[in-house]
Image (cartoon, rainbow, N blue to C red; front, side, top):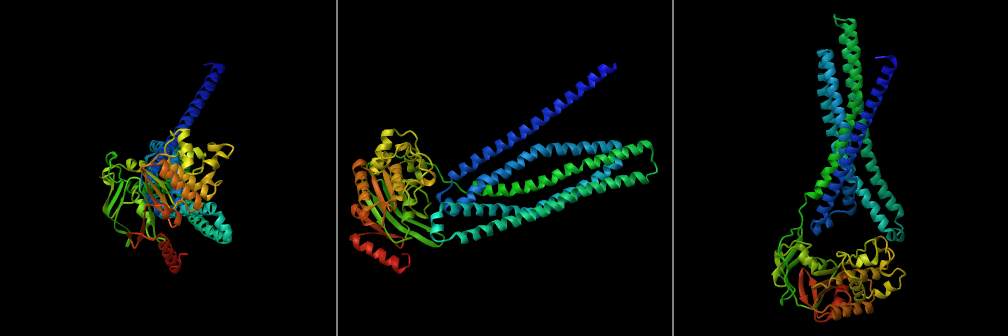
Length: 519
């Protein structure tokens, strides 16, 4: 091969090798990113799907900040581990195997030093994992608490400022962040200790190789060459061993995250089995000998209730008497301790949850307005409602005039949690959302408290006129709703009884609340 052609050959070889190296690096980088992101994508969908299938009580026992951190930071920690496992663990493992092979070919004794170090590295790795495990869990829990503190103070700014609570909330948040910081600091100390100890073992092994070669009686030029090569191989091992240390940290971080995620996915889901509901002439709702308790506290005690088609029933009672729990059993938010509930003459247990909830319109006590347009909020749950149906629902809820006064009308963006709306406007949007499907049963859980008495009465009249045949349950302490009802029931000591004198009963409830220090 001539000089010029030889240069061209080696230049071409260098370019080819460089191109192959770049291509392989791209494949590893892109492939690991794709697989890790795909893993996180499917995990997010799975976790969110599990959350949406949980029993209503699950959301009463978990804080929103904690759930948010599990769906964001914990999933990201798991994704980060998968990414580093694919992009670093495989090349690191291959490098270690290749190094061992070359040591074995140079001198079997050199590979023996390597085999002595490996068990020590494994032991240190396991010890490192064990010592940091509980701390990673506390870090994740504290992150959830931080999320909760942030959410409370962002959504509750009016209360915080109104009661001069800024300094107190700053102290609470500082305590949480301090705990988070201290736990991370401990992990950093452990990491610094182990990540330096592991390469030190490799250096000791390399030194042992030098000592062995130096005192061996077979020193020769070839032996010196193999000795230098062996030392270089051991020095090359320092980088992959450091990577192993980082992977141990990431693995425990991911393990704590997955444990927290599993606490969501392994909780029992709502049972969703049964048949379709058929309309018939029987009363829409019948409850027989229903009882429900939380722990040792009995909330509903042997309650029986029958609501006829088109009947307007009001339920009143003192604060904490269980009114919301009583109506929560109708959409099957809670599992009863005993008793049975019937819908259209058929037992609830025989119907699927969608079949039951599709026929119930619920206006909850705490109104949830989604960030989006007024149209999207009213039509929530079914995007196929026509403009005419949406506007009709708004008229029944007596919110149509307000919406028509806005420049964008039903396309007006209401902002996060409906921040641009008043309390009464939010409640009327929620009423429109509940009536648009023309349900067989409509439930108001003290959800007209921010609406003036005149408008409240007008809404009830519109419902009776426009939704003929719809049964209505109103939880209320206001005279308007109680006087409009066909029947008034009072929930007291876990039992229902009929009320004959509404005004007298309201005064009794107020007096009881004052004596108990509730108001």
